[in-house]
Amino acid sequence: MCGIVGYVGDKFVDSLLVAGLERLEYRGYDSAGIATLNRGRLKIKKTAGKIQLLKEKLKEDPLDGELGIGHTRWATHGEPTTGNAHPITDCRGEIAVIHNGIIENFQLLRDKLIKEGHIFKTDTDTEIIAHLNREVLEG
Image (cartoon, rainbow, N blue to C red; front, top):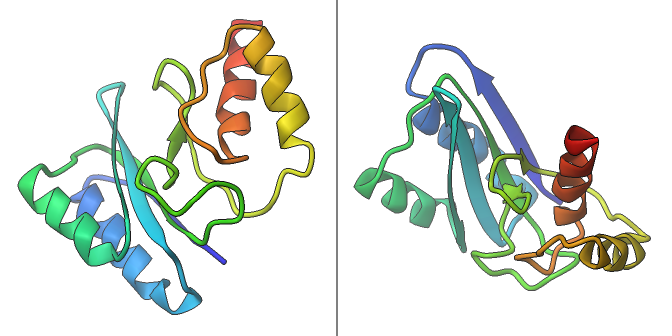
């Protein structure tokens, strides 16, 4: 299982997202992360392990912004590593996605996108969503 939270507003977005993820801890997870958008710039913090580790990273380097998404992951495709934690981005790091579920044909889609020049950074099926969105945006 996973937990997904989102926020749009004018408060401290990173602490609100983390608080939301903490409320979902009972669902079980092996990694956690958040993404925020501030003045058009996407920033991401994520970690394998407990939300407390994410909080420590954010204490050292907070993320601000007017909106954000957060996710706790229970690995199905790809090992429970910081790199495979959500949010996951596209090649350019401009699109961040979080996802709960399994993309059954992800390997077929991944192979097709690699042939088209996409570079994958994770072992997750979720990364397909970010790359497909990039394809749509580029027309």
